[in-house]
Image (cartoon, rainbow, N blue to C red):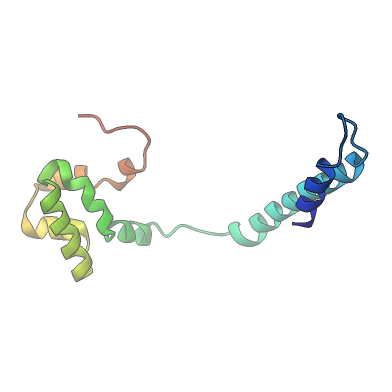
Length: 127
C-alpha cells in the first residue's frame, strides 16, 4: 500500500509532462513488481508444489452438489429437477442417486445429463 500511495502521489505532482517525482515513482513501481514476483515464487514453492488431486473425492463432492440438478431441466423439467435437488440436499445423497432411485431417466441419459466435465466447458451444448 505504501508503494501504491507513493506512485499515486508522485504521479499527481507533475507539470506539463515534466515530473520531477519520476525517479521515486519508478523506484516504488519496480519495488512492487519485485515483491509480487517474489511472492509468486514463494507461493508456488511453499503452497502449490506437492499438491495432489484426490479425484475420487472431487467427483463425490461434484455429484453431491444439488446445483447440478439444473442440468436435468431439459430432460425432466424445472419443477422435477428442483424436487430432485431439494431431496438430494435434504438426504445428503447425490443427485444421480435420487434420479436413479426415482427412475426419472434411463442410465445412459443420466450419464449424459450429469456430465459435470461438459458443464465446465465453454460454449453452448449441442442439440
